[in-house]
Amino acid sequence: MTLALRTLRLIAFRSYARADLDVGANVIALAGPNGAGKTNILEAVSLLAPGRGLRRAQPTDFARTQAGVGWSVTATLDTPTDPTLLWTGAEPEQRRMAKRDEKTVSVLSLGRIARILWLTPALDRVFVEGPAERRRFLDRIALSFAPEHAEHASRYEKAMRDRNRLLKDGISDPRWMSALEAQLVEAGLGMAAGRRTALAGLLAAQDEESAFPRADAVLEGEFEEESPDAETYRARLFDSRPRDGLAGRTLFGPHRSDLAVRYAAKDTPASACSTGEQKALLVSLILANARALTAQTGAPPILLLDEIAAHFDADRRALLFAEIETLGAQAWMTGTEWALFEALGSSAQRFVVKEGEAGSVAEPA
Ligand SMILES: Nc1ncnc2c1ncn2[C@@H]1O[C@H](COP(=O)(O)OP(=O)(O)OP(=O)(O)O)[C@@H](O)[C@H]1O
Ligand SMILES: [Mg+2]
Image 1 (cartoon, rainbow, N blue to C red):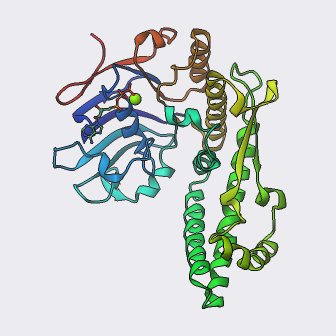
Image 2: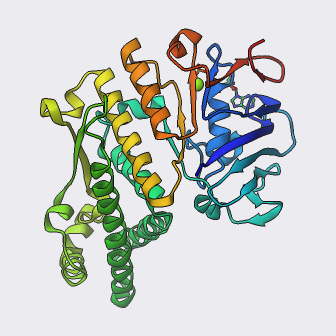
Image 3: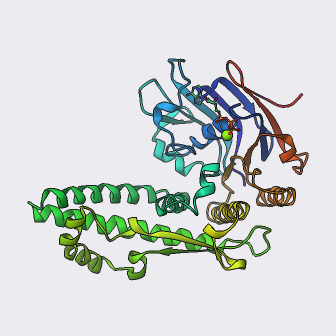
């Protein structure tokens, strides 16, 4: 069973006036100089899933500058059930829409059709940056397992914003405050449970045989230590109103948890590892995510690996390509030079990405 793009068409998207790709392979390598438009292609694929894409862009960024027309991404996909035609795009100043087999569907529902995972250079610093980046990383993994994770997270954010406002303005309506705290408890417990399930699935799916290092990961923080039930959690919020009021924000909850990752074989925190080692840990985690999703959905997810080869030596690159092939996932990879993809088998499909008036993508002559 497969999940794979067969055709991809971009119209007025980022640097492209138009681009058409016929995809005949599982492993796709895109090469071209800086600024040529490689990441733009991966970003277009990432928009076949809900959300803001792999750059977490603003909705107005996708439309080709000065084109003044709507942008769109159209793809035909083989899915475990049927071949599917997906379309997503937006008219100028309008919000993004989606269509499946030419019928309008919600953008959110895309998440049930195509599971798409990515690694980008922006994630290279996830272990050394603040906890918010790691929570977002984990939340995206949780979302890949359970699309409803996004709803828990957004309900939680909203309830917390409202509670914080009330704390600042003074609690004139205690019943409203209690209602918000009840929402916070419900969404917070849902979010925390989704994270724990995702993390457990991820750790279990790491392959002992893998050439990539095992990552140990635990959720840390006051909330995780106490792991309260609904009643305790609600009481905790009630009791901390004065303290939270002074701080001007909610101090207890899963929004303050952190994901602590360690390089297992070296028993070292990921933040103390070398750049290449940190990247290797990320690869371990994403391969585990993909394996677990394969077990759950019957088909490996599509992988978008932007500049994946950059921090790896030649041996590591060869091992990575071999593991991707074993996984059977459709993997889209970018690099600035063909040399980075030397170890790819002849079954891989190569595209040359050139900058130009309109941008171009073509198979090498
Ligand atoms: N909305 C837009 N309209 C027109 N051009 C855009 C738009 N958004 C981005 N670009 C252009 O797209 C190019 C960047 O493309 P992209 O990020 O895909 O490059 P890349 O090949 O991945 O480069 P690198 O190797 O440096 O990562 C830039 O030149 C940028 O100016
Ligand atoms: Mg790029």
